[in-house]
Length: 261
Ligand code: PTJ
Image (cartoon, rainbow, N blue to C red; front, side, top):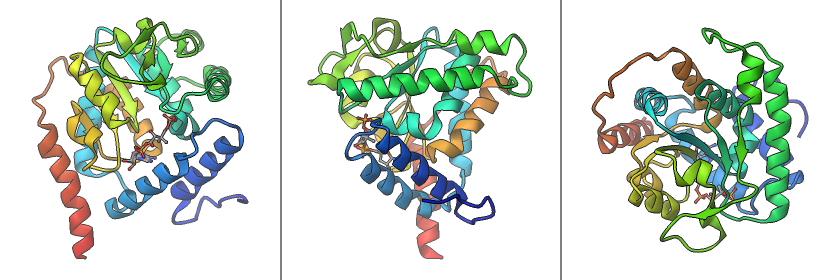
């Protein structure tokens, strides 16, 4: 795919495809990653390729929970690294929480490729200006972000296969987990452990979306900078009441309205 002009009406969507095809060539993705993305694109088309009001509220709720967490972790898979590595590292730097690579289709080659990519992006982000409003030494904050996952020392109970492998310093002992594009079984197993699960899923009907504590029905690349903004600027000390099902219904209603147009 050639250069995508900024003026293109579907710039973001085309950029997403470009990033994913490049990541696939670099050995970072699962074979089914592009299928999963295509499913997301279909839902995003119905959303009008914009962050809807219910997603915006869910992002703020997520930022509050992540800031209040005793131990937050950002869990990433292949698609998340391909699409939003830099913003997720920025979020981790603001929170001073680890990022854990936790993939469904685990192979040593993919783990190595994802780990190297995150380390490269961490260096790039550490050399940038700090996000507006953030105070402190940005270079140190970013360099301090720990990337976990290469050497799992624990397992998620009641979950079979390599996807249950995780780290005690990350997912196993976290109280709040932010996880884009999560698998339904793992989301359920982690919920059963009493963790607060914040998921990003364009499909408001998926098992993950229905089970999570907070579901952000939005495109990952689009929502990540908004989450970063809220992590830097949101100062609420209280946790507002949250009805995830009602919020999901509102996102679904936006999609259904588009079908009626
Ligand atoms: O890297 P791995 O091995 O962990 O594998 C990752 C994939 C994504 C292949 C794996 O988790 C998978 O098969 O996912 P699913 O079950 O197809 O679920 C993907 C969900 O994410 C679907 O409900 C999509 O609608 C949604 N989705 C896809 N792309 C995006 C998205 N949601 C938000 N932003 C996206 N860019």
